[in-house]
Length: 240
Image (tube, rainbow, N blue to C red; front, side, top):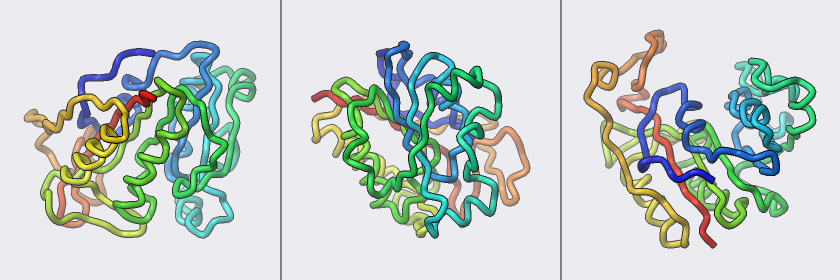
């Protein structure tokens, strides 16, 4: 596997470039699990990694679950496995051979999802019900990894306040306090976590905060409620 990226990095709203850089370079034998919510089941990394020879277990919330309704209604829940390859990043026959699908509640990861070389989630765990639910998911997902396996996650980050924040059953925005506590907890549990890098940048695009209905592109920051937010990437390696 490749070495860790340089710390924990803020990144743009597209998310996938950070994930692609942080995930290890695969081999044909690598089994992979993707842990993601219904809101991100169309993200392209499953197809991209399958195109590199990985076996993928892609997960999404059961479409019959009540929480799935909002994602189905807004076109953010995949109706079929091939939806994950809608950009043609993997040969269709190879994609169907290498990628499988499971309905998984990220708040209750099955005990048989174990032994993977890496796991990832993309803009997912902030939708699990509360700040605590999301932090618990990141810690629990480490159990899915084989020793030496890598976990990479992205989520929403509060640039305005380290005290108050947005927290609701639909969306929670993580503060520096939450992220630092999570990283420290992972380290205490024996996982390798690189040094923190929470520099938000000083360039023109770094300073611009897009407002609803979020029409400006590119943007690195959005206004959610009364908070300026961006996206943050997290990386951890299971040591034991």
